[in-house]
Length: 300
Image 1 (cartoon, rainbow, N blue to C red):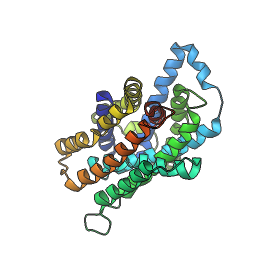
Image 2: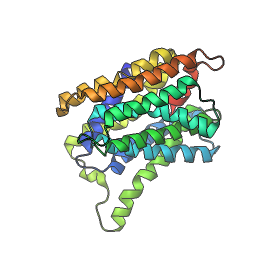
Image 3: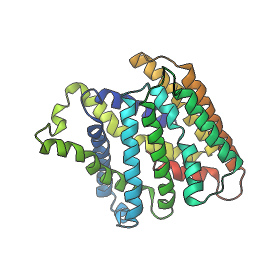
Image 4: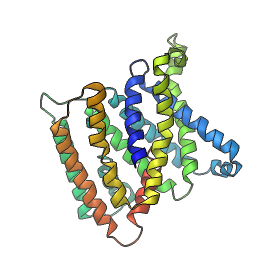
């Protein structure tokens, strides 16, 4: 979890730095391109992984990767516009969206704890966003939209993980999302605009570029390994340390104010998630650690 927390924080810093010269599509191109290069290298040295690349359940892959890309785009754009702590706090509404969509789409039972997590999640959003007040930031809606699309992606992932392995999900994610990210620069180039953005990367952006590509993989690996090694009731609360950690990072590197409303709203969201998590851990059937690992395994 320490590796995951550091990876998420570095990802936000790298996106903020790259956002000064690149647009969000170009930033996501770096992330997907680096990931695909590493995964292809693994396939080259480990031929047994080639079985994971069979063209199976491509409809699920397309649905999962399209919604995930839209979420990644919205999240990355929000990182360049909002304080880090606000983005990370609102991102934790994803479990509330998952509970709501699972009831509507998959027909899963809406228990008291699941309903409570949804209510507390959206109360937390109101505290953070404060609609109608002078402090309201419209860009916060980007993060809420990202959380919603992440939830849809996780619903599809739940279906996909019963059919294929994690490596297959990661490979097709990067392979499909790379052309999605390249689409906008290609259109600009066709109309006479700038092309081959890599030539606009100065030496000062070399470290953020390499860092973004690396943490795109390490965040996934560390979080998945954490869920393999410990119960979700231990791992998930540790994941919430992302909020104070990124708030400290934003304060240190960009002078962002430590907003009490953000922490108050985040507290409500976290209480809702923990309430549902503890209730799910007491239910008979699939252990919560296993179900949460499946959901988290492809989120990054």
